[in-house]
Amino acid sequence: MAEPNDSQDSVDKATAFAVRLLSRREYARQELAQRLSRKGYGSETREAVLARLEELGYLDESRFVEHFVRSRIDRGSGPLKIRAELMQRGVDGALIDRGLAEADCDFSRLAASVRQRRFGEERPAALEEKARQARFLAQRGFAADHVRTALDVDPAELGLE
Image (tube, rainbow, N blue to C red; front, side, top):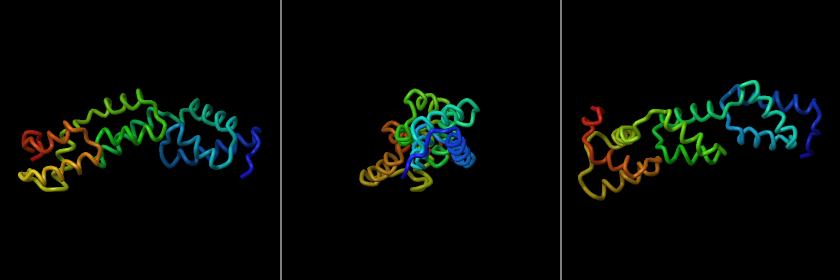
C-alpha cells in the first residue's frame, strides 16, 4: 500500500481515523500506532497524531491500563496474564505495576472465586484433581501463591460463602 504523504491533510485524516477507534475503546499508544501503520500512515504522521491525541487527553496510557486491568479482573484473569497481555501491547512495566497495585484486588480471593465457579464449592481432595485445578488457575494467570491459597484455604475464610 502506498504511504500517504505527511501533509496536514494526511495528519487530519489519520487523526479522524484514530479518534473513531478511540471512541469505541481505550488503546495503548503502541496499539494505536500499529493501527495507523496498517492503514498506511508514515512515521511522521503517526507521531504527530499520537502527540496531538495525548495533548488533547484522548490517548492516555494510564487510563488504558486502568480500564484494561479492571476488565481482565472482572473476567477472572490473574496478574501474570494481565501483565503479559499489557506487555504485548507495548505498555511500560512501571505503568503495569502501578495499574495492578491501584486495582486493589486480592488475587488469592479472586483465584478462589474463579476455582469455585468452575469446579464447585468443595475443595479437591485427590492429588490428581488438585493438580488439574491448579493448572486451570495457572492458565488463567494466577501466581503459585494465589493458586495454593485458592486450593488450600476454606472458602469461608476468604469470605466467599
